Image 1 (tube, protein in one colour):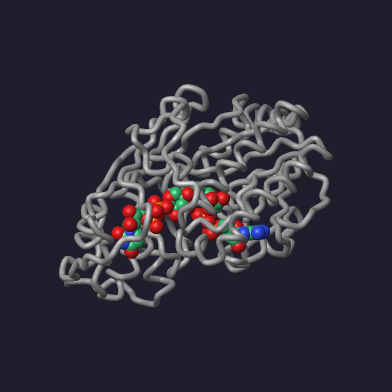
Image 2 (tube, rainbow, N blue to C red; image 1 turned 90 degrees about the horizontal axis):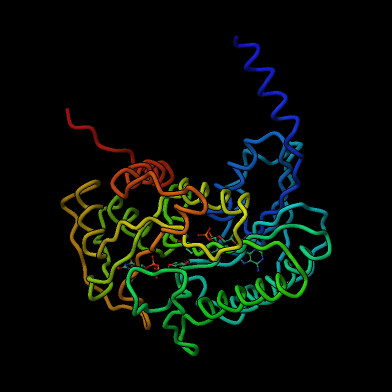
Length: 334
Ligand SMILES: NC(=O)c1ccc[n+]([C@@H]2O[C@H](COP(=O)([O-])OP(=O)(O)OC[C@H]3O[C@@H](n4cnc5c(N)ncnc54)[C@H](O)[C@@H]3O)[C@@H](O)[C@H]2O)c1
Ligand SMILES: O=c1ccn([C@@H]2O[C@H](COP(=O)(O)OP(=O)(O)O[C@H]3OC[C@@H](O)[C@H](O)[C@H]3O)[C@@H](O)[C@H]2O)c(=O)[nH]1
């Protein structure tokens, strides 16, 4: 019986074509988890290109030297010639601190980088997936956000290099699709967290966890009532792969609809790591969206996807990883 099952599995696997997959930004947080998942399939060959602005070779160290894996230092604002079947286009700094650091470079990465990847997709006939963002909805006046909502975005603000950049990237994807018949997929990713985020990434979940472990005050940016919806990274990767493999162009929201104020997030982190750490209210940055929560009806109906890991399940997994990297073990009370 078992051998009949194995024979069947072997036939199935032999029917699946070998795929060569390019992941831009594959040395980053989401990208490296995506690479781990893609490498599990022995039919996949994975090529990562990254300029290491916010990513690191360390995130991919287990694959370096593997015969089905290749890592190339490359900036997507420059042309790239590789023969591939699929392109997961993630390259772009994602933390507001880093995308505001060199805004001209951020918009070039979104516009010229996406043009270059679309040019590559056209030349080699590859399917291309763009990781767009919930930031295309700006400071949303509709809540929760459906894909049909056009957003409320400041075109000249300090976040515009990122959110307007991603909006242009979406436009380019659809123009190449309509004009050149390129197979496109667009994911609108909502706040994602998990192990391997940079300790000093600057995003709220990594900040609070690192602060609590170090015994420092949790910096809640005022007013603290602004909301976000946090998706665990393994759920995100599963959604991205389903979108790439499915039949729908999108845009499709991929995120966890569980919605929390930043004050609630700080309380959850305190409760988990150290109830004694204080919360410190600090000044916010301009144009910070006041609310954010995905409507994921499309992802459920078209991709059969919904997140499995709640914030309370995901935070301890991230705590373990941060403690290990910060060298601060958990105190055990006997
Ligand atoms: N994490 C989130 O909450 C979130 C939310 C919405 C959208 N996204 C999108 O998902 C993607 C990945 O985000 P992440 O959280 O893993 O961020 P990250 O900063 O960890 O990863 C981005 C990667 O892209 C690389 N990169 C940046 N500019 C590049 C360039 N010009 N050429 C080549 N490589 C470049 C970086 O070095 C890094 O490895 C981004 O496109 C981001 O906009 C993320
Ligand atoms: O230390 C902090 C950091 C952040 N915050 C608050 O936490 C909220 C979330 O901020 P983050 O910097 O984590 O992320 P944002 O939601 O602003 O942007 C994010 O969402 C969409 C993605 O495309 C972006 O890549 C990602 O950075 C904001 O309201 C911010 O004011 C704090 O209260 N304290």
